[in-house]
Image 1: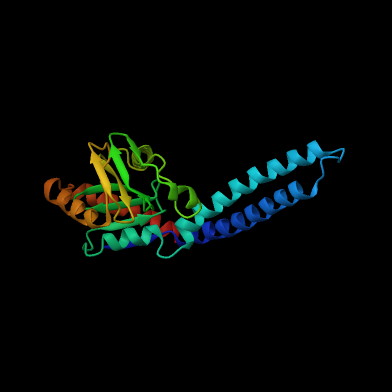
Image 2 (image 1 turned 90 degrees about the horizontal axis):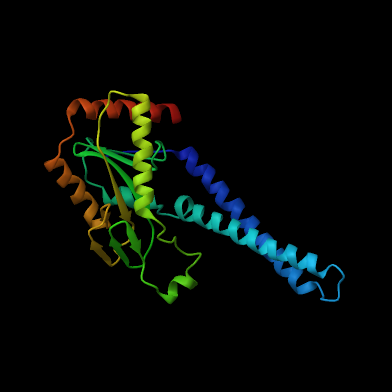
Length: 239
């Protein structure tokens, strides 16, 4: 399998992660210092309390932004590297594109065009229809800064697939191709599937899923070649 990665974006997001984390920590500490130092008898006590409260909110948001970017772009292996490992063994008819196209992770192969949304969580997931959820666990509170929440992976996958579809329509209006969104979990978590709108896949399931699609719904050769040409142009422009 051919792997294409937007290294410039990764480097930029690493810088964002480091700066946001430092800013968040500094602002949080500043807010706490103000809270502890200002006496209620101070004539501007209300103003200082408001400043401290705002600092705590801003610091928390900045820290979360930094943590989000650290998880996705700084820690090793990165989630995209875990995805690549799960697909290891596919031949060079397959190519995956990370942060190069309108969707974050795009896989092109004989079986079709896939948009892959990644979730880096170790908690159990119940994938039911369009509403997926994580059963409540007290450890999630203590792990707030340790791993990402579930969010709305179905909505995100469908949105990214639509963005890719619109981009393809713009650059090649005559090109007609189905785009299949999937959600990939980086860990072998307990996963309950109840008629999910979008396929949720564990590391051991992803490659089999892709190969099964190649057997049941081959992408027309002309469409496959046009897509590879389009994507190659983007890679060359970005590098």
